[in-house]
Image 1 (cartoon, helix red, strand yellow):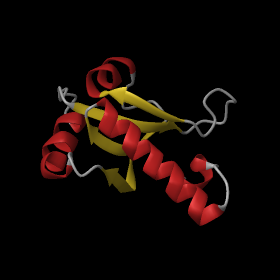
Image 2 (cartoon, one colour):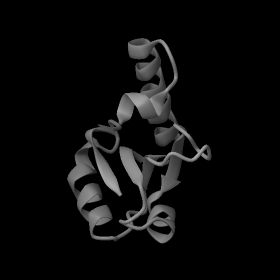
Image 3 (tube, helix red, strand yellow):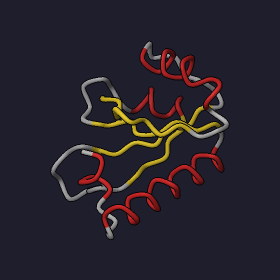
Image 4 (cartoon, one colour):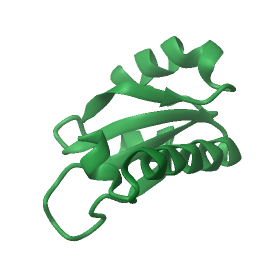
Length: 105
């Protein structure tokens, strides 16, 4: 598990960002937090696809050893959808394509 150096944080999550990050690093769930992740492996499964997961699901199904990059934090599911859309829009505007993994990594 890695954290993206230019972590995307929604406006709603901004006031709680330090607490969210601290709790996730300590393997403590945050009830309102959703994470936007990208798997950093070379398999064709989920190649360059953003995945939105609740923090509880993330902590139960991923370990620190997993090759995952956390690229965004949001408060609530709809907020996570908006943030993921913003990330995709930014990638398209800057690269002319949708290769998110290449842009992030």
